[in-house]
Length: 328
Image (cartoon, rainbow, N blue to C red; front, top):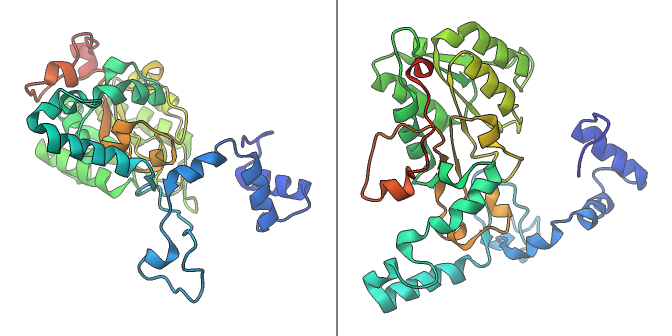
């Protein structure tokens, strides 16, 4: 459903409900929206926990055999029904082939990430050579910061939202401490205006304009995990680059939720994962199987090499780097 005429979602929903003579809280309204949902058939592809299998449920208030109402996709998506089949297939291969499973079978383990790169790059609007499958989300961000956060005496600060996802706070605090700085002075927090839950774009841009000469990295989410606010990443990148700042994003709650175009927006780095909202989609075998995290490595100056780095981490075609002046 697309909002029109500048209406906010609540107003749009109320208008649709009124058009069928219902309230937004009516079951008829929910069924009306379901009937128009082009993705309605996807529901049957996922395993919904039953009320009776969940801890802490008062079964006198619900039907024990009914599927639960699941609103936790921001933390962990529902398991796709095919997951057990795919995982068992690899376990069987391990049983039957041992070490040869690295290079044999429908999904050779040594090359498993190659099967997911193209589809993931498409989802975020990146080139396949700009994308690498890595490890845990915060670990990936630490690795990216090791390359992109290059503080100097004049440019050492990181711009972060005041209510960022907790692990992003831990990440930024530990990175500035690693370089010998105090988070109290090295981290600039953008805060909502009094009485508001969401940030104003003009406040973000004004903060970059005011402190840009001191900012080494602008680091924000694509979608705010708590309020659901979508940030204008294109404008943020342009504002940051105008001040020669590196601009990166945590896209854990944006991937699969909103249209992304990281390459054309000239985003410097980003990281995301597949086990949250992306599990609502019909995604590829590899992503369902590994629940791997991804990172855009568009301008990476490599710091940590491994025996497969030239294929998995930094393809030979990845040569785009900022000049020494731009790095500050």
